[in-house]
Amino acid sequence: RDYKDIKALHISSPGNPTGTLYEPENLKRLVQYCEEKGIYFISDEIYHGLVYEGKERTALEFSQKAIVVNGFSKFFCMPGFRLGWLILPEERMVRQAEVIIQNLFISAPTLSQYAALEAFDYEYLTTVRETYRRRRKLLYEELREVLDIEVMPEGAFYLWVNVERYASDSYEFAKKLLEEARVAVTPGIDFGKNKTEKYIRLSYTKHEDTLREGALRIKNYLMR
Image 1 (cartoon, rainbow, N blue to C red):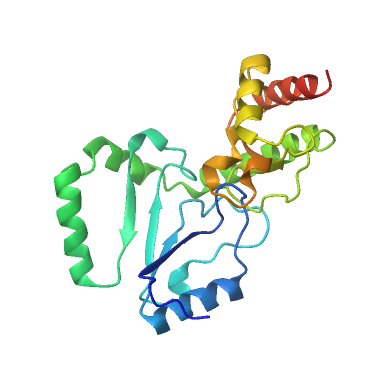
Image 2: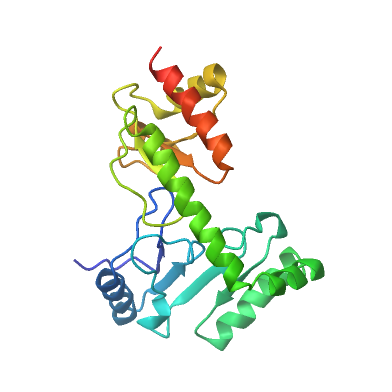
């Protein structure tokens, strides 16, 4: 099917909120379709490095015309440094990006840039990925008997959980969970309209002891 009014396609793999990863062949087909139709392909690769099943692939493997977005907030554990990068296929786009950036915040903070250089410690980054892998397993094991976790995330650091047997409105469910169990989750309706009212998103970015306590509070709340 051809779409004549599309100017750009933006995807994230692994994605938020499900943590699912595009199969290489599917990613390749999307990238090449966009190139053939003159559609800008924007690949948000902010969760690259945080992949537990399979291997992430950059869109640049399939086309030199892809636009790649990345940063230091996820895999490098530097969310407060507000630092990232763009890979752009054309010189004119580089200049256009420079104009926008200069008007928004002039330049990236010097201290953040020095910190980013030190962040490329691949031994440490391997430890980061394995830490998230343990947290993913812990939260899944703690909650799978009381919550419907339909898909084990392949990457990122989220669980996408079906709460339909407890509520029909994920926002109200999240609100009550916060008020009564003191656990903060993200209602699925924040992520579009594809039956998202049935889901919540959990994040496993906290220490394992905190995750255990949070899981216990959720279980106690649901089994009252």
